[in-house]
Length: 287
Image 1 (cartoon, helix red, strand yellow):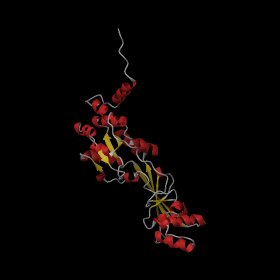
Image 2: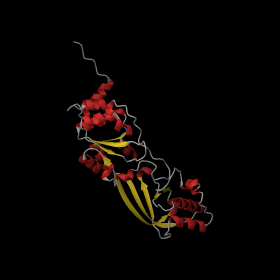
Image 3: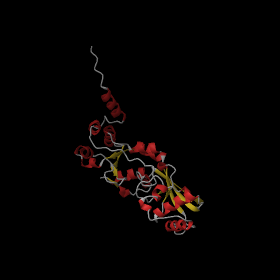
Image 4: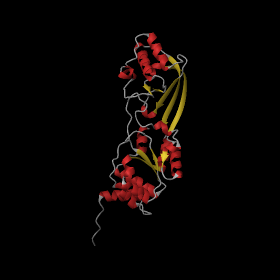
């Protein structure tokens, strides 16, 4: 009696994956297979540049106070459940310091362009009208940024995904502030002020919960006009929510697919096979 031919390595792997996530039941295997064959222009989720600009990468801090209106999708309940999971991803702590050395501030929340340091920014075209050659000049320009100096509190941000950088959150004349800090460093000026530091970090519990409940994938804008992808969503009534977190032209949106739905889980696993970047893996690496 002849033995059956062994399955190919690829088909074995796909079958094992389908079996693991329960896609073989309720007609979900075709969803997985069709999704895995989609040809979409997937792009990697942007990384964080090592520069002084707070917005030099995905604004993950917005997830903490994400408004419900930030999510789109056809079913209100699906958006509400995804929102409840997303806002648990980021933890925030606040620290008040009576004395903080001004020279330790090395970055800006309100900053245009990419600069490696405050010194680079201070010598750029953006700051060319600011000249600090004396202590009087220093006080003058520091006062433009901190009108209540020496009694004004510094508002600072720090994020786990940006290392140890401290970002000044003031909106008043960041060019003057950067120039004053650069001068204080150059001259060794010991200037201390009260400070309030807001620390952001990724919640491992929140991330684990989201991983258990959702696929969260970075989808190109072109996906929403791709007939094959939209047919998969609509034909099988797949529950989903969309999040446009990056807000820059051409950036991917995040698609959240609840794993409790066999159809959504099948679509998520198929999109991963097709090359969709995994937002949750991205966050895991940052944490």
